[in-house]
Image 1: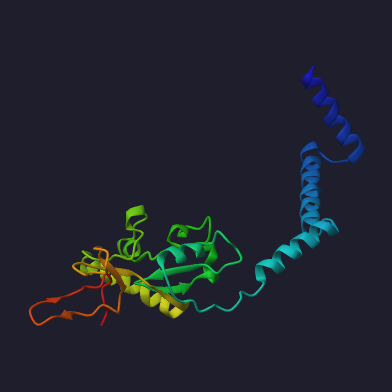
Image 2: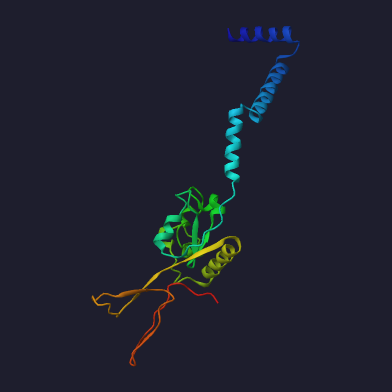
Length: 210
């Protein structure tokens, strides 16, 4: 039954179009492809306006970077890309950079999104995506890892605008603030205390590059 229908269809195609069945179906497929391409290029006016609006939104220039000065690591987390109205920031060795122009990489859904809003020095040095490495603590890294981190730092310095620094607290042991607890001061403000008999040295948590 099916074979008889096919034979009848082939005879009808040849009789009405003067083409062989293979040529006829090739011609139909070509017409369909042309129709699909043309409708994709032009489409409806609503589709065209939607695509134009989306393109203009993508091409909208980024606002100039805003200098933040010194902020805490907790404050830096607010700039991880979750709020599209805020700049996208990331820090290396305590220096904060505006990476908004590379949102496709560091923004939500990007391959390096977990680095945004953090000082990811250790993770970058080790090329690690582990949660425990998402920190600015680079103590214990080897020469190869420190060189890798320096390469990242040079890249950020040349490509992105520095907008601030991370204000970290350093615990001072042995100090008396009146309630028997250790006091905290920021890095850079720590100075050795001399009382004529002993001195306390406070080491910074970040490695210093010459």
